Each structure stands twice: as structure tokens, then as C-alpha cells.
Length: 318
Image 1 (cartoon, rainbow, N blue to C red):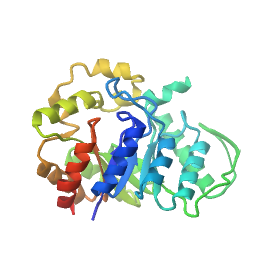
Image 2: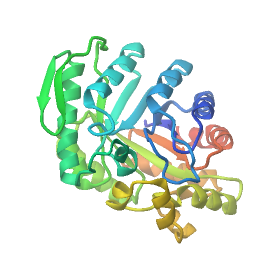
Image 3: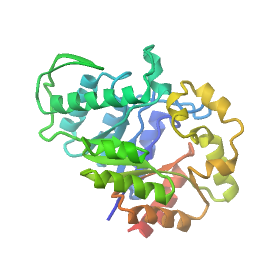
Image 4: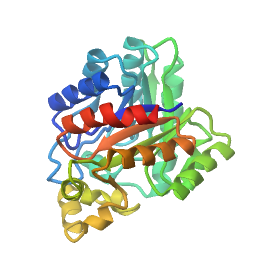
């Protein structure tokens, strides 16, 4: 049976309000949570971007939920610092924390002033970061000279069991590559055929661990409101790679999304006022083999979504 979790979107919600939301989600029956990790939102309309790692400590203390975070080591974050952050949360909250590692987006990473590398270089850099983080979590002293540099780093505070390092992928090629090193795979909702191909590529390449899925959705009492919320908040998130990787400011995302129609948003967000319809879509994802499914209502107001899905949708998923 799949585990159904709550996605904590720092780009859209003030961290104090997000802490209230994830606490409410636990009370409503959500069994897990995951967190984004952005420096910049995707749009000025979203308007937030709290520091995920500060918030995660508070959220883990405030709830009993297992948590994950999607992180991009290598430019904005040195891998030794990410290893320390993972190790500390793992030591404080044993068995409740995992980190998904990806190559990142320019909108978050350009702040360092370093050149934003081409995709092949970012992929190679991430692979080096994974090895550094694993070695540090295993208690080794690490020195490394490559696309990232590490000098005699050692973690003095570590959990007994290292937290899982999960691969983040949206394509068959990346899913297959993640199978080389990851303890699991996470992707985002897409047509069922695409999701099946991504999941199969990971498994057929020898990928271990759980398959996880983040589901973007918009629910409201009426279709008009659900569509309006999705269009207002998520129309800057409809662009496929490399656009979403390479645009570097919220202002640019807003400019290129000015003419995006609600129908285009509905291609990447599950939009409906019908709770039964949402339950059916989520059950389809579970039938594909996704063992952890994280629900992200793309609106900034979370309470009504949490209460409605806790009362009417989660029971249909069980």
C-alpha cells in the first residue's frame, strides 16, 4: 500500500504558515511530508522562499512525520555542508529523514555568481557530490579535487544509519542514470505512459528502494476557482527542460508565462472540484507502482485542501 504525504512548497507559503499546514496535514491523516528547497520562487505571484533546512528541523520536531527534501548540491550548496545537514537531521530524528538530490535550476544557483554549467557538467558534478556525501555520512575523511573541491572534511555528528539519498528524475535517461547510485527515485506527475516509462527505466537498470511521486493538483469548491488558482499560481511552471532549468529569475518566468492559457496549466496540474476524480487519479499513480505519493495543492491557502482531502480523499486511497 502506498504512503500518502503532504508537499511543503516554500516558494508559495510563508514558513510559519507552512509549519501550521504540515501540522494540520498530519492531524488530517497525511502520513509523510516532503519539502522543496529554493532560493527563489518561480513567479513574483508566489512570493516566498524560506530556507528549507531551518524549517525542516522545526517541522520534524512539531510532527511525527517522516520528511524528505529535494536538494541540488554542487553550486549554491557545498556537498560537505549538505552532508552535515543531512547527518544532523538524521541523528536528531532517526529513520525519519531522506534527501533527494538533483542537478538544480539556474533560478536558485545563479546567486553565487558562478557560471551556470551545461547539463552534462551539472550531471557529472552531482555524481561527485553524491560520492562525497555518502563517504562523509559513512564516517570517512574526504578530500576531493574535481568539479567540486573538498579538503579533509569529516562529519563529527552522524546518525547510526545514514539517511537515504534519492535520485530526482523527470526523464527516462535520468532515471536510468539514477539507478547507478540512488536509494530510491522521485519524479513529478506526468501522463501515465511517461510515468510508467520513467519507473520502468529505473527498475530495469537495477534501481533499488522506493518509487516516489510528487503530484501537482488544484482543488476548490468550483471548477472555475480550481482553474483560477492553478493558472494564477502555476502557469510559470509549465515549461519543459531546458527552459525551466535555465531561466534565472522569477521576473523572467513571469514574462515568458504571460500568454499561458488555463488549458496548458491543466496539462501539468490535476485540476478539478471533484474529490472522487482526484482520488481516482491518485489511485492510478499507485497502480503504476509508486509507493510514496506526495500531494501538492498549488494554491497558497492550504487549510481547505488539507481538510477536504483528509476527510474525503485519503480514505478512498486506503
